[in-house]
Amino acid sequence: MKTKNSYSQEEKEYFMREALKEAERSLVKDEIPIGCVIVKDGIIIGRGHNAREEQNQAILHAEIMAIQEANQQEKNWRLLDTTLFVTIEPCVMCSGAIGLARIPQVIYGAPNQKFGAAGSLYDILQDERLNHRVAVETGVLEDECARIMQTFFRQGREKKKALKQIPQSQEHEDD
Image (cartoon, rainbow, N blue to C red; front, side, top):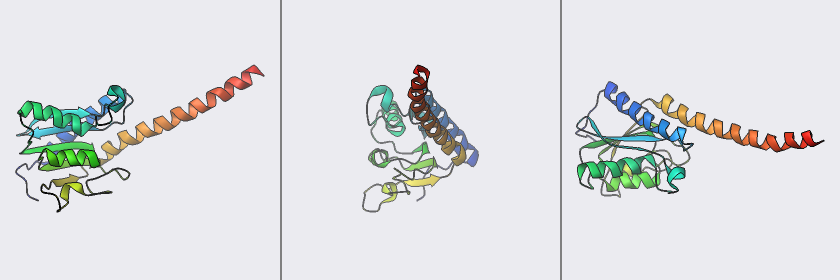
């Protein structure tokens, strides 16, 4: 699908690095580190990062936050002539929101084999049964985008393992 927004590889990497900065904001809050920016005419008009735990709201994914900010910036629910850059493939909910916002182009870093709805598990963004289809590009800074997620989940497993060992070591101290 041809879109009005054509970016050089350098520009794509720049905006994906901005999305990675958003992912890092999630990481320091112990949230799943996914970040997103929405770009129009070369300017970021929306930013978002996961904030489900912090805000206790299931829908506060990076894409939803970025869409909300861009809607406010544009004073319009339609985000025509924009490109959404996100570190990890959008889920079903976010893919639906992207379509409903009429965003014409999505560029994501790494696939999401467990929840992805832009080609991995589902292909909502390009489903011909829907009235709005989105051009999708993958693999921009894929290694960096995957690495921050891998680090988060590895650290989570290490924390769980450490917590399991604490009670055992305390029991031995009492002997």
